Length: 329
Image (cartoon, rainbow, N blue to C red; front, side, top):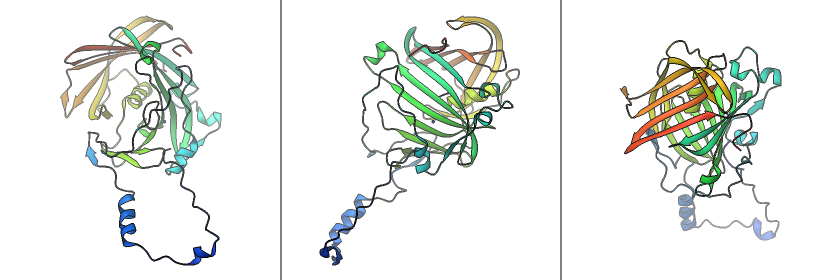
């Protein structure tokens, strides 16, 4: 959940010309001034505010496709200077403060969970969630998670993916504050959440240009942060509905325990509680998606297995299952 700033380096001013001619002022050319004004739009332009649905500017910068590293080599992690360039500063804390013993059980020490993902019974890829401890994000306490996802060897021959997202979650509510995307097939960008006003702003990390702005709801989650929210809270009672932004849509998500089961995985056997997430959109229950999650009964509430069935033209199934340590690439 593990694996989260943005603008590129500022251009450097050219040194002044030391020749005598440089001291003679040149009359402005009206046509050049007009052309320059068109070529340099105001910084605030370049996006469209929307509600719950993503829209990308048609003339957005062309996306590049950098060479994909082999599955065993993760892409480079975003540096702290990225955060500094768009106003956020990430400060690393000493280990005793980064992993406080009075925090959630999963956050009291370094944690790494790897999963294989099967689609229609075929292993399509892997995901690794790393808990990197508590940090200060512009003076605000946040949990740093790193989430890496990559395709299996077979699928990599057709469509290789090796992406990383660095998450910064509020330590009290687990809502996301900042996401840093390092992509193998698209431009890297950063999502900044204004949880008080209910907006998400995406900026290209290379130059800081706004890619899109989305109006959501205050205290909104995404699938990863809501999973850590459920891990943090007790599972003996049903949870209230939470706003979640996923798949370019706003949802209301809740979860309740529906049973207990001892299951066997490649990592061993676990006593689990079966949790059933429920999705609603505009108050209406989504009947096309069925999900179940098996979480350990201990205080860490580790997700051991996830099952999802959804209908789009036909019925599809997806299963994620916990792997032994350091397997999956």
